[in-house]
Amino acid sequence: MLSRSFILKTAGLKPVEKLVKKSFLFRPLVKRFIAGDTVEEAMEAAQPLLDRGFKISLDYLGENTKTEAEAMQAKSTYIQMLDRIGPQELDNGIETCNISIKLTQCGLDQGTEFAERNFRDVLSAAEPYKNFVRVDMESTEYTQRTMDTVVRALKDGLNTGTVLQSYLLRTDEDVQTIIDLKARVRLVKGAYLELAAVALQDKVAVDAAYVRQAKRLLIDGHYPALATHDEKIVNALNAYVAEQTIDRVGFEYQMLYGIRRDLQDRLLREGYNVRIYIPFGDSWYPYFTRRLAERPANAFFIMRSLFKG
Ligand code: FDA
Image (cartoon, rainbow, N blue to C red; front, side, top):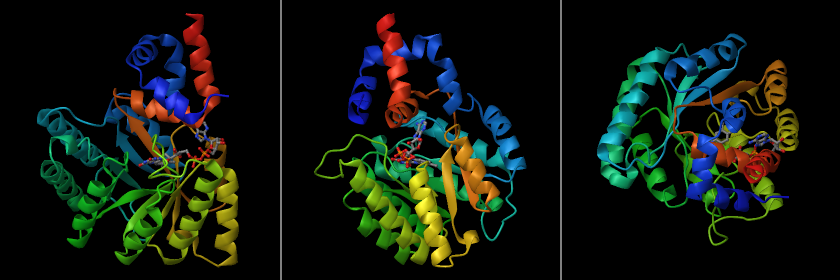
Protein backbone atom coordinates (compact mmCIF):
# COMPACT_ATOMS: atom_id res chain seq x y z
CA MET A 1 0.00 0.00 0.00
CA LEU A 2 1.27 3.53 -0.75
CA SER A 3 2.51 5.36 2.32
CA ARG A 4 1.61 8.93 3.25
CA SER A 5 5.20 10.15 2.89
CA PHE A 6 5.62 8.41 -0.50
CA ILE A 7 2.47 10.08 -1.80
CA LEU A 8 3.50 13.53 -0.52
CA LYS A 9 6.99 13.17 -2.01
CA THR A 10 5.74 11.90 -5.39
CA ALA A 11 3.03 14.54 -5.61
CA GLY A 12 5.70 17.20 -5.03
CA LEU A 13 7.54 16.24 -8.25
CA LYS A 14 6.92 18.85 -10.95
CA PRO A 15 6.11 16.37 -13.79
CA VAL A 16 3.52 14.62 -11.58
CA GLU A 17 1.98 17.97 -10.65
CA LYS A 18 1.78 18.94 -14.33
CA LEU A 19 0.15 15.66 -15.32
CA VAL A 20 -2.43 15.71 -12.53
CA LYS A 21 -3.33 19.35 -13.20
CA LYS A 22 -3.68 18.79 -16.94
CA SER A 23 -5.69 15.60 -16.88
CA PHE A 24 -9.48 15.69 -16.90
CA LEU A 25 -9.47 12.22 -15.34
CA PHE A 26 -9.00 13.66 -11.86
CA ARG A 27 -11.60 16.43 -12.11
CA PRO A 28 -14.33 14.46 -10.29
CA LEU A 29 -11.93 13.77 -7.40
CA VAL A 30 -10.83 17.42 -7.30
CA LYS A 31 -14.49 18.51 -7.32
CA ARG A 32 -15.24 16.25 -4.40
CA PHE A 33 -12.78 18.15 -2.17
CA ILE A 34 -12.92 21.69 -3.60
CA ALA A 35 -16.07 23.81 -3.77
CA GLY A 36 -15.22 25.84 -6.88
CA ASP A 37 -13.02 28.66 -8.12
CA THR A 38 -14.77 31.72 -6.67
CA VAL A 39 -16.20 33.00 -3.38
CA GLU A 40 -19.65 32.83 -4.99
CA GLU A 41 -19.22 29.14 -5.84
CA ALA A 42 -18.00 28.45 -2.31
CA MET A 43 -21.07 30.20 -0.87
CA GLU A 44 -23.31 28.17 -3.21
CA ALA A 45 -21.76 25.00 -1.80
CA ALA A 46 -22.07 26.36 1.74
CA GLN A 47 -25.73 27.39 1.63
CA PRO A 48 -27.34 23.92 1.77
CA LEU A 49 -24.99 23.04 4.63
CA LEU A 50 -25.90 26.23 6.51
CA ASP A 51 -29.59 25.54 5.89
CA ARG A 52 -29.20 22.16 7.57
CA GLY A 53 -27.54 23.63 10.64
CA PHE A 54 -23.84 23.18 9.95
CA LYS A 55 -21.40 26.00 10.64
CA ILE A 56 -18.80 26.70 7.99
CA SER A 57 -15.31 28.10 7.50
CA LEU A 58 -14.27 29.32 4.06
CA ASP A 59 -10.71 28.70 2.89
CA TYR A 60 -9.22 30.50 -0.11
CA LEU A 61 -6.72 27.98 -1.47
CA GLY A 62 -3.14 29.04 -1.96
CA GLU A 63 0.01 29.20 0.09
CA ASN A 64 3.52 30.62 -0.10
CA THR A 65 3.07 33.79 -2.10
CA LYS A 66 6.12 34.63 -4.21
CA THR A 67 5.75 38.41 -4.28
CA GLU A 68 4.26 41.14 -2.10
CA ALA A 69 1.72 41.81 -4.85
CA GLU A 70 0.47 38.20 -4.63
CA ALA A 71 0.09 38.51 -0.86
CA MET A 72 -1.86 41.79 -1.25
CA GLN A 73 -4.15 40.07 -3.73
CA ALA A 74 -4.75 37.21 -1.26
CA LYS A 75 -5.49 39.73 1.49
CA SER A 76 -8.07 41.46 -0.65
CA THR A 77 -9.73 38.10 -1.40
CA TYR A 78 -9.87 37.37 2.36
CA ILE A 79 -11.56 40.74 2.89
CA GLN A 80 -13.99 40.06 0.02
CA MET A 81 -14.89 36.76 1.70
CA LEU A 82 -15.67 38.56 4.96
CA ASP A 83 -17.78 41.13 3.08
CA ARG A 84 -19.64 38.37 1.25
CA ILE A 85 -20.31 36.44 4.49
CA GLY A 86 -21.50 39.62 6.20
CA PRO A 87 -22.41 40.32 9.84
CA GLN A 88 -22.59 37.37 12.19
CA GLU A 89 -25.42 36.71 14.60
CA LEU A 90 -23.59 34.92 17.34
CA ASP A 91 -24.91 31.60 18.61
CA ASN A 92 -23.72 31.16 22.21
CA GLY A 93 -20.99 33.67 21.32
CA ILE A 94 -19.89 31.77 18.22
CA GLU A 95 -20.17 32.86 14.59
CA THR A 96 -21.87 30.57 12.07
CA CYS A 97 -19.65 31.35 9.13
CA ASN A 98 -16.02 32.37 9.53
CA ILE A 99 -12.83 32.21 7.47
CA SER A 100 -9.56 30.30 7.72
CA ILE A 101 -6.41 31.90 6.37
CA LYS A 102 -2.73 31.06 5.93
CA LEU A 103 0.13 33.32 6.97
CA THR A 104 2.25 32.18 4.00
CA GLN A 105 -0.58 33.49 1.83
CA CYS A 106 -0.37 36.79 3.73
CA GLY A 107 3.28 36.94 2.65
CA LEU A 108 5.28 35.23 5.42
CA ASP A 109 8.03 34.36 2.91
CA GLN A 110 8.27 38.06 2.04
CA GLY A 111 8.71 39.01 5.72
CA THR A 112 7.14 38.35 9.12
CA GLU A 113 6.17 41.98 9.69
CA PHE A 114 4.70 42.30 6.22
CA ALA A 115 2.56 39.17 6.77
CA GLU A 116 1.52 40.35 10.22
CA ARG A 117 0.35 43.70 8.84
CA ASN A 118 -1.75 41.91 6.23
CA PHE A 119 -3.14 39.51 8.82
CA ARG A 120 -4.12 42.41 11.06
CA ASP A 121 -5.80 44.19 8.13
CA VAL A 122 -7.93 41.06 7.70
CA LEU A 123 -8.78 41.07 11.42
CA SER A 124 -9.78 44.75 11.18
CA ALA A 125 -12.08 43.92 8.26
CA ALA A 126 -13.67 41.09 10.32
CA GLU A 127 -14.28 43.24 13.39
CA PRO A 128 -17.40 45.21 12.32
CA TYR A 129 -18.97 41.89 11.28
CA LYS A 130 -18.14 40.34 14.69
CA ASN A 131 -16.39 37.64 12.75
CA PHE A 132 -13.56 35.33 13.70
CA VAL A 133 -10.48 34.60 11.60
CA ARG A 134 -8.63 31.31 12.11
CA VAL A 135 -4.99 30.96 11.13
CA ASP A 136 -4.29 27.50 9.69
CA MET A 137 -1.05 25.83 10.77
CA GLU A 138 1.44 25.01 8.04
CA SER A 139 4.75 23.10 7.98
CA THR A 140 7.25 23.37 10.85
CA GLU A 141 9.26 26.00 9.00
CA TYR A 142 6.42 28.34 10.01
CA THR A 143 5.12 26.99 13.33
CA GLN A 144 6.96 29.34 15.69
CA ARG A 145 6.30 32.45 13.58
CA THR A 146 2.63 31.53 13.29
CA MET A 147 2.31 31.00 17.05
CA ASP A 148 4.13 34.28 17.79
CA THR A 149 2.01 36.28 15.34
CA VAL A 150 -1.27 34.83 16.62
CA VAL A 151 -0.29 35.16 20.29
CA ARG A 152 0.56 38.86 19.77
CA ALA A 153 -2.87 39.40 18.16
CA LEU A 154 -4.60 37.53 20.99
CA LYS A 155 -2.78 39.63 23.59
CA ASP A 156 -4.13 42.70 21.78
CA GLY A 157 -7.64 41.29 22.24
CA LEU A 158 -8.25 40.46 18.56
CA ASN A 159 -10.81 37.87 17.53
CA THR A 160 -8.57 35.14 16.22
CA GLY A 161 -7.20 31.69 16.94
CA THR A 162 -5.01 29.08 15.35
CA VAL A 163 -4.49 25.37 14.79
CA LEU A 164 -2.31 22.89 16.68
CA GLN A 165 -1.04 19.66 15.15
CA SER A 166 -0.92 16.60 17.42
CA TYR A 167 1.95 15.00 15.48
CA LEU A 168 4.38 17.72 16.59
CA LEU A 169 6.47 16.99 19.67
CA ARG A 170 5.96 20.56 20.88
CA THR A 171 2.16 20.49 20.88
CA ASP A 172 1.47 19.61 24.53
CA GLU A 173 3.28 22.84 25.45
CA ASP A 174 1.43 24.85 22.82
CA VAL A 175 -1.88 23.48 24.12
CA GLN A 176 -0.97 24.90 27.54
CA THR A 177 -0.10 28.30 26.00
CA ILE A 178 -3.47 28.42 24.25
CA ILE A 179 -5.34 27.38 27.40
CA ASP A 180 -3.54 30.08 29.42
CA LEU A 181 -4.55 32.69 26.82
CA LYS A 182 -8.19 31.44 26.87
CA ALA A 183 -7.94 31.32 23.09
CA ARG A 184 -9.76 29.23 20.52
CA VAL A 185 -7.78 26.48 18.87
CA ARG A 186 -8.49 23.83 16.24
CA LEU A 187 -6.80 20.53 17.02
CA VAL A 188 -5.73 18.43 14.01
CA LYS A 189 -3.45 15.43 13.57
CA GLY A 190 -1.19 17.30 11.09
CA ALA A 191 -0.97 17.04 7.32
CA TYR A 192 2.64 17.87 6.30
CA LEU A 193 5.71 15.71 5.81
CA GLU A 194 7.83 16.26 8.93
CA LEU A 195 11.03 14.72 10.28
CA ALA A 196 11.25 12.47 13.35
CA ALA A 197 13.24 15.19 15.15
CA VAL A 198 10.09 17.32 15.36
CA ALA A 199 7.13 15.03 14.76
CA LEU A 200 5.75 11.63 15.74
CA GLN A 201 5.97 9.25 12.77
CA ASP A 202 3.73 6.48 14.00
CA LYS A 203 -0.04 6.76 13.49
CA VAL A 204 -0.84 5.03 16.79
CA ALA A 205 1.29 7.58 18.66
CA VAL A 206 -0.29 10.51 16.77
CA ASP A 207 -3.80 9.23 17.54
CA ALA A 208 -2.91 8.85 21.24
CA ALA A 209 -1.51 12.41 21.35
CA TYR A 210 -4.66 13.68 19.62
CA VAL A 211 -6.99 12.07 22.16
CA ARG A 212 -4.89 13.27 25.10
CA GLN A 213 -4.77 16.87 23.83
CA ALA A 214 -8.44 16.91 22.83
CA LYS A 215 -9.47 15.79 26.32
CA ARG A 216 -7.32 18.48 27.85
CA LEU A 217 -8.91 21.13 25.64
CA LEU A 218 -12.41 19.84 26.38
CA ILE A 219 -11.79 20.33 30.10
CA ASP A 220 -9.71 23.53 30.19
CA GLY A 221 -9.91 25.02 26.69
CA HIS A 222 -12.06 27.83 25.32
CA TYR A 223 -14.51 26.53 22.68
CA PRO A 224 -12.01 24.08 21.13
CA ALA A 225 -12.54 22.78 17.60
CA LEU A 226 -11.84 19.08 17.26
CA ALA A 227 -11.03 18.57 13.60
CA THR A 228 -10.88 14.93 12.59
CA HIS A 229 -12.70 12.38 10.45
CA ASP A 230 -11.49 9.55 12.64
CA GLU A 231 -14.67 7.90 13.83
CA LYS A 232 -12.92 5.89 16.55
CA ILE A 233 -11.53 9.10 18.02
CA VAL A 234 -14.87 10.90 17.67
CA ASN A 235 -16.63 8.05 19.49
CA ALA A 236 -14.03 8.05 22.27
CA LEU A 237 -14.35 11.83 22.68
CA ASN A 238 -18.15 11.69 22.70
CA ALA A 239 -17.97 9.07 25.46
CA TYR A 240 -15.60 11.35 27.38
CA VAL A 241 -17.93 14.32 26.95
CA ALA A 242 -20.82 12.28 28.35
CA GLU A 243 -18.77 10.89 31.23
CA GLN A 244 -17.45 14.32 32.25
CA THR A 245 -20.85 15.97 31.65
CA ILE A 246 -19.26 18.53 29.33
CA ASP A 247 -21.77 20.87 27.67
CA ARG A 248 -21.97 20.24 23.90
CA VAL A 249 -22.34 23.95 23.20
CA GLY A 250 -18.82 24.49 24.52
CA PHE A 251 -16.94 22.93 21.60
CA GLU A 252 -17.31 21.97 17.96
CA TYR A 253 -16.27 19.22 15.60
CA GLN A 254 -14.78 20.26 12.28
CA MET A 255 -14.47 18.27 9.08
CA LEU A 256 -13.37 18.95 5.53
CA TYR A 257 -15.82 19.52 2.70
CA GLY A 258 -16.59 16.23 0.97
CA ILE A 259 -14.98 13.94 3.54
CA ARG A 260 -17.00 11.55 5.74
CA ARG A 261 -20.32 13.26 5.03
CA ASP A 262 -22.01 10.38 6.85
CA LEU A 263 -20.13 11.21 10.04
CA GLN A 264 -20.80 14.94 9.60
CA ASP A 265 -24.54 14.20 9.36
CA ARG A 266 -24.52 11.82 12.30
CA LEU A 267 -22.85 14.30 14.64
CA LEU A 268 -25.20 17.08 13.59
CA ARG A 269 -28.21 14.80 14.20
CA GLU A 270 -26.86 13.91 17.63
CA GLY A 271 -26.79 17.60 18.57
CA TYR A 272 -23.08 18.46 18.28
CA ASN A 273 -21.83 21.67 16.69
CA VAL A 274 -20.24 20.71 13.37
CA ARG A 275 -18.31 23.11 11.16
CA ILE A 276 -17.40 22.25 7.56
CA TYR A 277 -14.17 23.69 6.17
CA ILE A 278 -14.87 24.70 2.57
CA PRO A 279 -11.87 25.29 0.30
CA PHE A 280 -12.18 27.13 -3.01
CA GLY A 281 -9.87 28.76 -5.57
CA ASP A 282 -7.72 27.62 -8.45
CA SER A 283 -4.53 26.90 -6.43
CA TRP A 284 -5.87 23.56 -5.32
CA TYR A 285 -2.90 21.26 -5.97
CA PRO A 286 -1.09 21.23 -2.55
CA TYR A 287 -4.40 20.92 -0.64
CA PHE A 288 -5.49 18.15 -2.98
CA THR A 289 -2.28 16.14 -2.53
CA ARG A 290 -2.53 16.34 1.27
CA ARG A 291 -6.04 14.87 1.01
CA LEU A 292 -4.74 12.08 -1.25
CA ALA A 293 -1.99 11.27 1.20
CA GLU A 294 -4.58 10.77 3.93
CA ARG A 295 -6.49 8.29 1.77
CA PRO A 296 -4.05 6.07 -0.11
CA ALA A 297 -6.92 4.44 -2.04
CA ASN A 298 -7.49 7.79 -3.84
CA ALA A 299 -3.79 8.16 -4.60
CA PHE A 300 -3.62 4.60 -5.86
CA PHE A 301 -6.35 5.45 -8.38
CA ILE A 302 -4.27 8.43 -9.60
CA MET A 303 -1.01 6.47 -9.84
CA ARG A 304 -2.72 3.69 -11.80
CA SER A 305 -4.21 6.20 -14.24
CA LEU A 306 -0.85 7.97 -14.70
CA PHE A 307 0.97 4.75 -15.49
CA LYS A 308 -1.77 3.59 -17.86
CA GLY A 309 -1.15 6.88 -19.74
P1 FDA B 1 -6.99 10.00 9.65
O1 FDA B 1 -6.11 10.54 8.57
O2 FDA B 1 -6.45 8.97 10.55
O3 FDA B 1 -8.31 9.50 8.96
C1 FDA B 1 -9.36 8.89 9.68
C2 FDA B 1 -10.43 8.44 8.70
O4 FDA B 1 -11.01 9.59 8.09
C3 FDA B 1 -9.93 7.61 7.53
O5 FDA B 1 -9.85 6.25 7.87
C4 FDA B 1 -10.97 7.90 6.49
O6 FDA B 1 -12.13 7.16 6.73
C5 FDA B 1 -11.30 9.35 6.73
N1 FDA B 1 -10.48 10.26 5.91
C6 FDA B 1 -9.47 11.05 6.34
N2 FDA B 1 -8.96 11.77 5.32
C7 FDA B 1 -9.65 11.41 4.22
C8 FDA B 1 -9.60 11.78 2.83
N3 FDA B 1 -8.71 12.68 2.40
N4 FDA B 1 -10.47 11.22 1.97
C9 FDA B 1 -11.38 10.32 2.42
N5 FDA B 1 -11.47 9.90 3.71
C10 FDA B 1 -10.63 10.44 4.59
N6 FDA B 1 -3.75 20.03 8.99
C11 FDA B 1 -2.72 20.88 9.21
O7 FDA B 1 -1.57 20.46 9.26
N7 FDA B 1 -2.98 22.22 9.39
C12 FDA B 1 -4.25 22.72 9.37
O8 FDA B 1 -4.43 23.93 9.55
C13 FDA B 1 -5.32 21.82 9.15
N8 FDA B 1 -6.62 22.26 9.11
C14 FDA B 1 -7.65 21.34 9.07
C15 FDA B 1 -8.97 21.74 9.20
C16 FDA B 1 -9.99 20.82 9.28
C17 FDA B 1 -11.40 21.28 9.46
C18 FDA B 1 -9.68 19.42 9.21
C19 FDA B 1 -10.76 18.39 9.34
C20 FDA B 1 -8.38 19.01 9.03
C21 FDA B 1 -7.36 19.96 8.94
N9 FDA B 1 -6.05 19.55 8.75
C22 FDA B 1 -5.03 20.46 8.96
C23 FDA B 1 -5.75 18.18 8.28
C24 FDA B 1 -5.38 17.23 9.41
O9 FDA B 1 -4.12 17.53 9.93
C25 FDA B 1 -5.38 15.77 8.92
O10 FDA B 1 -4.38 15.63 7.95
C26 FDA B 1 -6.70 15.31 8.33
O11 FDA B 1 -7.78 15.77 9.06
C27 FDA B 1 -6.74 13.76 8.31
O12 FDA B 1 -6.66 13.27 9.60
P2 FDA B 1 -7.91 12.65 10.40
O13 FDA B 1 -7.92 13.26 11.75
O14 FDA B 1 -9.15 12.83 9.64
O15 FDA B 1 -7.52 11.14 10.62
